[in-house]
Length: 433
Image 1: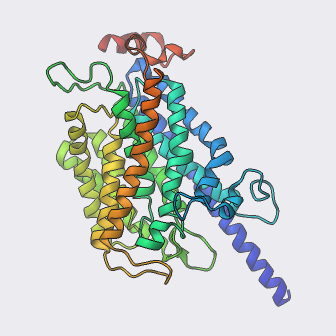
Image 2: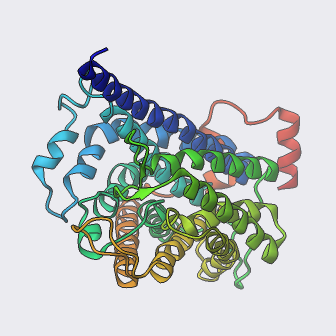
Image 3: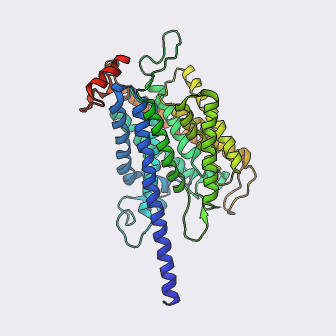
């Protein structure tokens, strides 16, 4: 083999290795949605089980074509602000030569696929908070607005290597504490304010009632499956270039070793923190997620005991955040605002506190500062909350956001042609309430 042939073989091996890496990351991320499916169905009462499941399935399905038609363009076109860069966006137009079979392009489709799974994750985060009273059509509109538009603006600004939050403020969010979790959590909060609580959640004298889902074991198992999927999610936040040096989402050097240490340490810390304040297995597994999000922004740089401490803090924060919302008479059925939104804020700001002064990897971007992280945090909150609130308010004014009280009393599964469980089990569980 000549040197030229050897070089060509190495280059093709690198391309195929990168293609294969992201291909299998996509496959692993599908577990996130299998987990959300179980999680939300278990957290629903029997009469709403399949409606919750169908809602989650349809969100995933609608995100795929909308990400192809305009979502990818949004991510590529907006790194510099609210005015799109049409030249950058050209590569995300659905009729572009790279948006289909092309033997000279080994990476566009799998990177797009990874972003499809990120997008579907944002929709699933919002999905759990609104179970048992949102109308299906309005939910799909909201899911597409979040998954194929809002979060992609945040990603373009704070995850793209040329995003203005990165180049002007040194915003650092490698594991998406802000660009996925803050945005999704606060989008959900905006929707919840207009959607209102489930019937019976709050009593006339300020009572807060526990509307227990029908299967805590299913919910807990679903949460653990989500964790499995998040191994793929975090893996897809890395840049694989085949040179022997991994890169973070901004192109800075990192290692799988660092991510492994800190992912697992924050996972364990979150469980222990939630256990310390609740002893409840639901919050323990939610704490595992919140613990990861509390450390995710600086996952590539933290010392592992710090990742554990941040995870612990996230696990402690979650139930208190949920109680705070309930005192405001906001009914988040699964604690998504607290798990994703509040822990996302903790993650972004903690990065500014503990990594303040960390030097930039490139002369084109500043180093990490608390100010830069604070600006990014505020931007992510607004990107999530404003469209979630405004769009759900419009749907509310049109009278199509919330199912009627009669439908809620009978159950959202009324429109589903299949029963969730055999008749005798269903009757027994209905009798229990």
